[in-house]
Amino acid sequence: MDAVSGGSVVTLVRGARRYGLSKSKIAAFEQCPRKLWLSKHRPEAALVDDGAEARFATGHEVGEIACGLWPTGVMVEAEPDLAAAVARTRTLIDEGWSEPIFEATFEHDGVLVRVDVLLPMRDGWAIAEVKSSAGVKDYHLGDLATQAWVVARSGTPVSSACIRHIDSSFRLKREGDYAGLFRDAECLDLLADLIADREAIVARARAVLAGDEPDVSTGEHCARPFACEFSSYCARHDPPDPDWPISLLPRTGRAIAARWAEEGLFDLNDLKPGVLANAVHERVREATVTGEAYLDRQGAIEATKGWAWPRAYLDFETIGPAAPRWVGCRPFQQIPFQFSCHIEAEGGEIIHTGFLSIDGGDPRRACAEALVAQLGAERCGAIIAYNAAFERRCVRDLAEAFPDLAQALIEIEARIVDLLPVTREVYYHRDQRGSWSIKAVLPTIAPDLAYDDLEVKDGGAAQQAWFEAARAETSNTRRDQLKAGLETYCERDTEAMIVLLRRLTGAGRVDGPGVGARP
Image 1 (spheres, rainbow, N blue to C red):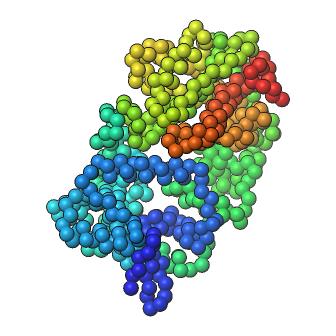
Image 2: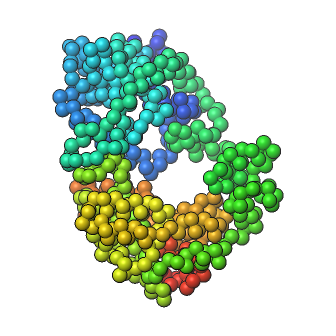
Image 3: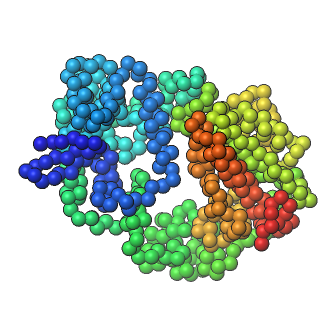
């Protein structure tokens, strides 16, 4: 006897409980059996990352748009319970429903799935799994195979199974008109082996749930295809990592670490001078072993001496929604809603300007106008960014969007220079742990000018703050808090570049006017 209740299916066999499964539970099992077991028996051990809510919101928005493209379709609600959803789906199919069915719900052998879009075809039914990505990923196929297996085994013939993903070439022509946003990737022919494995996978997953906690060591599967929320729990009894693992070496560190591990060497302290052929790797090793930062001050001076004064320091904050919000935008296009700019005179005087829009409207025009007003050639020379390709792309997109401002914006783009490659070439402190991100470098130069004390601590948090501030239901008090947090965070980024460049070149003082005292 099968009983469907809430979000799971429980099968009763002679009074014994057999755990119900879903697409997400099977996916968890395929990533790691221990993940599945913990999700059922120890859910309190999970540590959900800060971006989980944002990813859920994106998926929900994209799903709603996909449904909206078929106004004649019918939604199968999960109320009053999923048993009713299964029955409603079966009724629609049996009565010959000829339009799309959204969240069509099926159950087979205690496995429950809800299909994003079920479309009638001449020779069966088409399954469409809606994804907010720009293409098909390997793990999508496992999800799709589970759905196709359950749908077919429940008595509904499947003639097509596709991933309906975002078409990155789409450009919004009319507000709210998303026709053409999605592209279907037919996958049914790729699923045969995966579908054939479903029954065995279901049996193994049930055996895991019915047994004791699996003894699975931590490894690469903890982060692939998703960062596992139980990683910290599972790693609590792992032997401690080396203090300075060889894998910290930039770019190819993992591969190099694997080779040295074959010789029983795991820590950078174990490597002798000169054994690393790459000059940057040897620099990292030496700085790590000695504890002394590497600094080529003359190299920094030579690399930056041509950067004209007054110097501007520029940093953007952006959103990149999968479904573009404003006419002319592409999926995932980075839309600047904020920038911070410090302008430093050759004598050390500093002024701060910036721009921020959190009203939910299209910020691009106002942002472009603010850039032209604040960063014209009459106000500054070189415009310094960190990983400048990003800032250049933002400015270029604005120039494309607003032809009347294009010449001024292209001139701004031409003056953008990049502090990141200079820093990578002339500086390393072991506490960077192989990274030259501004957030890794800054604490080694100005420990009190870090990000830990900020309400908005990184770019992901800045995006979430914008979406929260833009919602109509957000209170004015909360919106003011978010505004202050965004302003402080973005200003910190450009302030950090001033401090960093002064430290690298030895020019002026690290505690210059407008920057604040620094040790």
